[in-house]
Image (cartoon, rainbow, N blue to C red):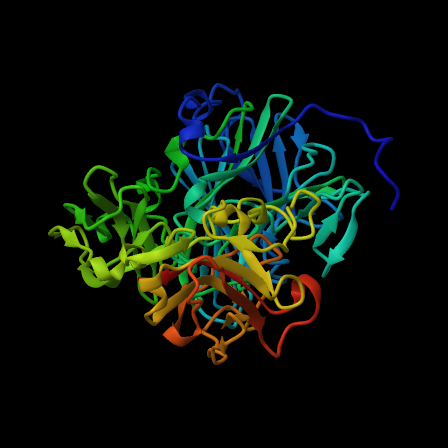
Amino acid sequence: MSGSSNRPVRRRTFVLGSAAAAGSAALAGPLSNSASAAAFGYSDDGSNYVVDTGANLVFKVGKSNGDLTSLVYRGTEYQGYGGMNSHIESGLGSSTVTIRQSGSTILISVAYGTLRHYYAARSGENNIYLWTNKADTSVSATRYILRVKKGLFLNDEPDSYTYTNSTIEASDVFAKSDGQTRSKHFSKLRVMDYDYVGWSSGGVGLWMVRSNHEKASGGPFYRSLLRHQSADGGGLYEILYYGQNQTEAQRFGLQGPYVIAFTDGGAPSSSLFPGTLTTSWADSLGMSGYVGAGGRGRVAGVGITGRNTAFPYTVGLANSAAQYWGSARASDGYFSIGGVLPGTYTLTVYKGELAVYSTTTTVSAGGTTTLNSIAIPSSNDPGNASAIWRIGDWNGTPGGFKNADLMTYAHPSDVRAASWTGNVVIGNNETASFPCYMWKDVNSGLLVYFRLTAAQAAAAHTLRIGVTTAYANGRPQVTVNDAWTSAIPSPPTQPNTRSLTNGSYRGNNHTFTYNVPASVWKTDTSQYNVLRIDVVSGSGTTGFLSAGTAIDALDLLS
């Protein structure tokens, strides 16, 4: 299709939101537009249930399939593009759809096989609350997509694409004529980094406020697509389960609420955010799998010792049924995680994104499990080991390496990326010179130059290379001074989908160790020792889809 230069240009704002960004948005809260003369209630037009929230929002849900078929705010229709509605996955098909009003709440229930999906409206609010209960794998329901009409919120951000783009990978990664890349996968944010996603234009804000993700998978650091935008229209997503670069099995049960929220252009109210949203009004609605606040518990830790205070720490809870997380306080490591379903969980402490401590804890309904101070053993943090040299930080991410930040919102071929090739000299800006990713067909054979003292050269040493994920079983094999080559290491368990090319370095952190004999070192201390790192694998294709891996840190131990 031709370019869009003949299309009208609108002023617009692109927003991916956090609690901090919404701190001054009190007037955009749930009841901010309750002065309308419209009456709260619902009707039946034959094909749809029509809900008027009594504020500025009227929406319709199809009686035959549970699709959101209309979304009118202040008289403007926002729903739909390409003849498609908003719905779970790509639409459920023939479903049983019912509606009832309970005081100031209207609940629409959708039943499709074992799946239950719900829309709720509250009197005087410009919000739609959604829950989805996926009970098993018999139904494909891994996302809710809010489809938005074209031309309302155009933008040219990492997760957008335009008619001037050309496809460079699969059918979902594009390159603009200026060499910048775009894809719906390029959200940049981890789950823990955002509370809402959406757009603002012309005095209207349209947002998807995420749920607490207790039934999602991948943990606090997981990345997946959040929205997309083009001249054809846009989409806002709540991802219930996403298999791309996924590290965990799918969880089942009621997920929500997640909220479609309209505002006067500002951020959605923080009262809608996961962690602050309360839904006692939903306790008596009879939704399948619903557990109110009284049926949940809390875990609190008085502190964490053994931390490296240069890094943030996160505490995660996970079992096969649910996942939660919270930040540890920088001053003493105190943490509190509320709204937890009863059960026994694995508790993991992360330095950055690197697990450095694990235990189990049990949560009961209505109670608080208080944990004594957690002491992280020094040996649990690889960064505590004495090293002759170290490249990067042991924090479970490629942060600080060449191109690391860009790769969360761009393809490796992007014009903004520095060259993926080039050798590294210890003592000469080595971390920023070392590429965050290595591929068999792109930059395998990278050389690291370093000198040793006479005492260091007289002893054997352990070399460590930490990785955060791998594609097509890519893993490092090393050669020292062309005198010794390591065995090819076994591949660790990693996701089997794309990762490095669609904005995610997060997989399963793994450390490869190599015992380098003393006989291979240079005895002349003025000479450089040369470490060669090759990416090996029999899988993958070519270029940036050849076998590859993401680097966390590497060091030569004393």
